[in-house]
Image (cartoon, rainbow, N blue to C red; front, side, top):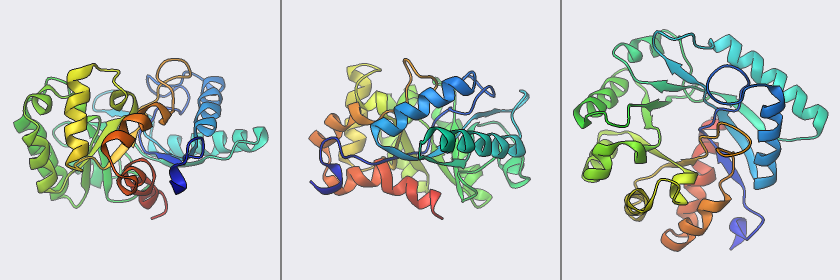
Length: 245
């Protein structure tokens, strides 16, 4: 099975909250380092860090994110960890987000044309569709974060297909693939996987105990419903194409 032999998996994580003290993720450097130890042990070699960006809140600026990446990278070198970190944000979509993105107020994914966006779980589909259209309209490709959290998508999976046809990309959380949100959500995810609508599996890690940076548990599900090439794409190669752009 090549790259995906048991205990020899390689993953690239494009959605996580490992930077210390700037959102509801890692609270300090000690937790960040604990999360990175888990990540490296689980086979994660590359991470795009995606702290939350919410309009009207106190958000870490682009420069702060870069500084923290440098500080954590230096700490990893001292400890002997070897994970490449790149800048990003998870943007809670709001009217004007597209214009603020163009103005450089927040990060795309590693400076590319990919942008991670999220919504309220109960958001109406028309709002999500219009948000996707808005981001596309300024030259970026929206990556819809954890699509399995949106009730409108679960109730009507064809709407996920419509977003894909518009030009959006789709991310799911590894823990959700493994079943953490229950059988209905897992069934929804499996349907998307079978149609190959999912572009990225991310950890959405927030801590070192419950929401950890580890994709291994989801691999058992992926191997049952997806072929090896597609698994490699959504757990590693697609994210690496952003990281190495």
